[in-house]
Image 1 (cartoon, rainbow, N blue to C red):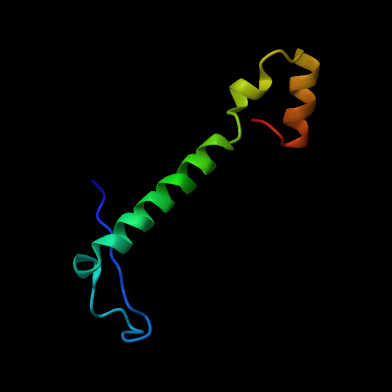
Image 2: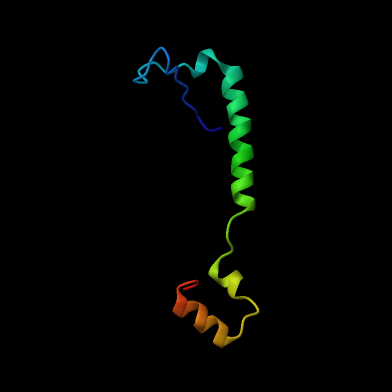
Length: 71
């Protein structure tokens, strides 16, 4: 289980007092939100060069390499 830190910027703008232990409801809500954002980002990850090159001719691959689109 990852550990999160939570700060009250209004009362502690320099983040000296970590308050996650006193607000488990907020930590739980933010944990779920972060997990959702991670799933969203992973679902939109670009394919690897190998996956992107699958099905391309050698000429197409060379052209994409010369343009810097794949390595």
